[in-house]
Length: 336
Ligand code: NDP
Image (cartoon, rainbow, N blue to C red; front, side):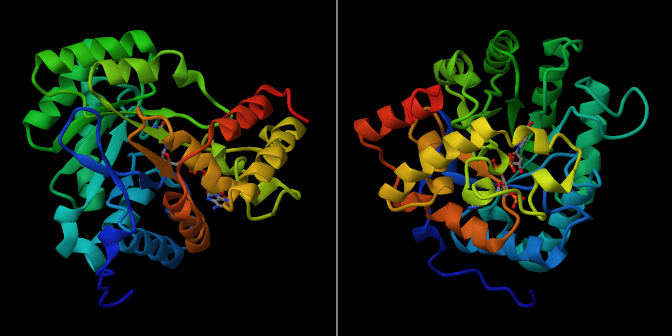
């Protein structure tokens, strides 16, 4: 888009929440670039989605070194879109990236060593053309690298000015708590913790959400729509252009995950959504945001239409006790 001018009313469309006990406000709905923004995707659709999001008050865009496909291309494309349209608005944006999953050949191109993270952030800064990231994450605890090594690297990255804040993603509870303590002692407290959370995957309710709250970290949820299962996308079959049918192969939803059980529950949930006057996607996002410990949800989208639908979630966030009980029954498989 040439000569882009952002919407003047962009900060009236969105709600913002503090990231835990920290001073940074994040939009309740953020946009993730894991899929649909890579070199295999339509660049003009990617551009339209990012600019639409910004026009609607979405200030936070979530990246990682390996997003594409091909890996790295989401950062490259985001950098281009930023340069062409949003460079004057850098101070209105919160841009995150991560390192820790497979990225380049050899022993240093994956996992959570100091070697990987330090090389990776430099590569990511280069691909995006940014001088700094707002948030830099350790993408995962790899099961081998000592937490101390990874977290010290995050602390150093912040001290070097390559990122303003640091975060962790998918850390099991034990390593999560170790990370929080170490970062607190170093006076580089964990800004935010990123985990999968949606109506179909509630593992974080056991420990991770409570720990984040205890240590004052914000909590941001990925795949809040279960990659599309909690939308109307699969209610009447599997569309050829859907994530499940595209065999993307980067850990994305596959056909085997579109089960009769999931679709049966989604249909029942959809009935409640209709009664609430919203789409199933909107109700699924509102449900995640309903937990006071949740700062933001990171949605994915393959079109402006989907994104627009998702952003309208803000229009109807509260649930009645009765609705919550009905949802619990459906999720437990005891409603018919
Ligand atoms: P979602 O659960 O939001 O799934 C997004 C997909 O759902 C879209 O691509 C689209 O599928 C479908 N969809 C979205 N909105 C609608 C709608 N209104 N109606 C119908 N279908 C809809 O999230 P993602 O799994 O994409 O994850 C979001 C972000 O979270 C990622 O981009 C990334 O930033 C982050 N993430 C982080 C991870 C980590 O390890 N830290 C792991 C995974 C994600 P379709 O393409 O079929 O149209």
